[in-house]
Length: 118
Image (tube, rainbow, N blue to C red; front, side, top):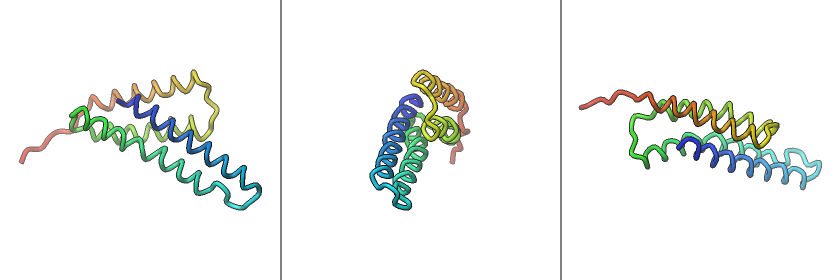
């Protein structure tokens, strides 16, 4: 589930980032050109990860996965930010980073929050 979420977030983030670059290039020297698009790319790229992890785990009928969502968000912030914002990773490195994210998420998903009964 986390690998699918990482691929989806990476695809959204890179396409929105490219759109931001195109807007800023098309506007020439206009001050702030592409700024809002860049902010949108960053927000969607970061905030879609916890939402996708949560939704995916709900579809799988898993419960008590709060640690996965929080840890996945933090790990994606670091790993996804390196991949997309810096743009220095090759295709092979991108695949390895996504595999690393999936492995870290798998570790986080092993820990379950205790259920309280009322």
